[in-house]
Image 1 (tube, rainbow over the protein chains, first blue to last red):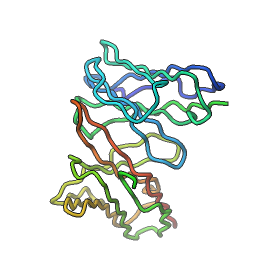
Image 2: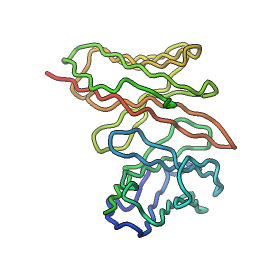
Image 3: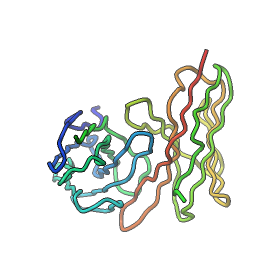
Image 4: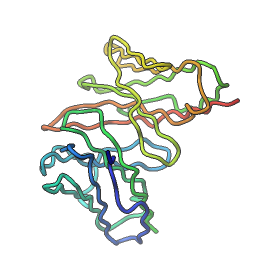
Length: 113
Length: 112
């Protein structure tokens, strides 16, 4: 079975631009969460979606937004990029909300110049 | 204070050694606990859940002390392939959803 997939794998943007990252969960998983991981730190929670509804939001500015589609795939959007947004963005899927057993995709490495 | 705190490492140990990692968490309402493993420039992968009764998976033993808000991971007979960063993770529920809070990770290097 295919695991969590994310696209693109790498991305280079300049300050002020916007970016859209995509995630497809494991088949049958209805919940998708997004995390940001900067070098030397653990992943930080950004959003969780379940059945197209936002179920949780971390301490990130409004420049960050996300959505989930009927097929349970998800997009993370970041507007007005800052240098500090450079990070590995991880998507994780789980069968439902409440589960700590989340399965992560390979991530999208975003570099903002 | 960070929500989840871990020994920063790195831990450099010889093959065959036993190594222990510790972690403390601040949110007493946290519901479940995990250890994830992350290889360099890869995604985190679930290693094992952690229960108050303690649980074992081969060479790995995890323990939770809710009263002290303390989590541990013991690796026996270390292998070169155990070299990775070990992330202590706390799961908490809120608003119909849940979030995982990760520690910064402890780096393990197993050497010949």
